[in-house]
Length: 268
Ligand SMILES: [Zn+2]
Ligand SMILES: [Zn+2]
Image (cartoon, rainbow, N blue to C red; front, top):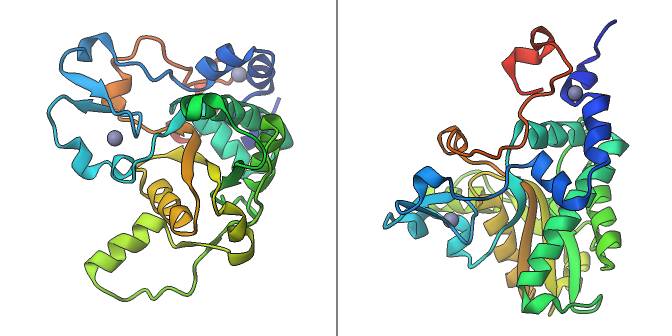
């Protein structure tokens, strides 16, 4: 039997098993729960803003982009082979993944809304937006996921809010270059942008590594008149050193595909 590259990403059996889980079990199976490992208790703590682990007394605030922007990130969990496989799958525009990822993001978004103003929100004061993700065809594959999350939350979706900013110069000082990296060269599109004024934005992205893109975009939305930004992502990338200490981890490998068929030793 031949194994297509797609079936190596996340096998149908694993996918079906994930889809059958209830919300809490699904979240734990896809991404590793954010919990300080026992070995780190007393010496480390979880950063409230970026959901990564920091050493007690270090200068984390100085380089935590999310902390600096006053954001509190909501995540399904720390990145695992399973969450990475789902993100790869999303780029290949598979509708089954859209359904599962939008369900996961809705779980994390409900947590974010619960933590903000006691979970009181309505379709006038709160809207859903997303950071575009280029798929295999170059089109934004994340828009339909974000629209799906909005339906699940009963909130309006602002489509086409952000565009890649091709007008920015590639020249400039180091400080300007850093600012460009921070915003990842996005800009708020004026017409959809008017719908952020005075509203709380549930801002969806697939993942957070450094937090600079999320912080840059959140800053732009506030500059455009948003009252508050609630960043929500599928997974948060953390160090392998940290994950090695975690006892309850989401699966990194599909047990059904022989190791020899897994591409380049990557998970799944
Ligand atoms: Zn499998
Ligand atoms: Zn942090």
